Length: 136
Image 1 (spheres, helix red, strand yellow):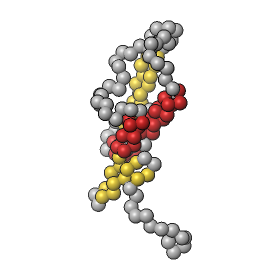
Image 2 (image 1 turned 180 degrees about the vertical axis):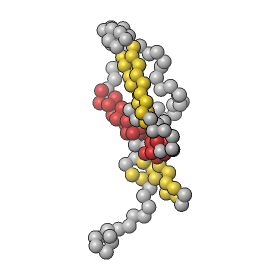
Image 3 (image 1 turned 45 degrees about the vertical axis):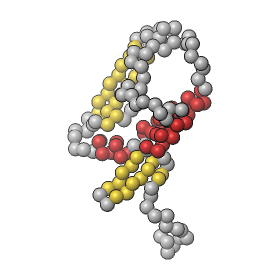
Image 4 (image 1 turned 90 degrees about the horizontal axis):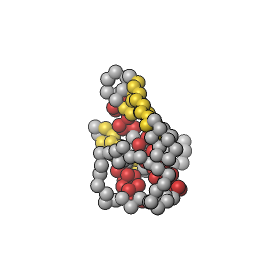
């Protein structure tokens, strides 16, 4: 291509769209550790303790709250960052999905019928696996 187009060789790929690329002779390792640290620092959680469950179990939400209001723009930014962090892990998704196990689609759903304290609205959620990979 260099004979046909004017270009420069930047060497091996090492960083792309927030994904760290480590190319070795036995394979390629993809990581988003720096991106995850950036998100934690941005939210003031750089020194936080890790948790297996990222939300209080059996949490009931109410419109009446004594906590300060949340900035909607900042909230959307954090949610977008987390979605990017989760959905850009092809190193995990591909290898787990292609390990030779039966490629079976399995789904779970749950609902808290009428669990809203103020409106009696329900809370629902779904989880779908393809093989052993969570896809939605």
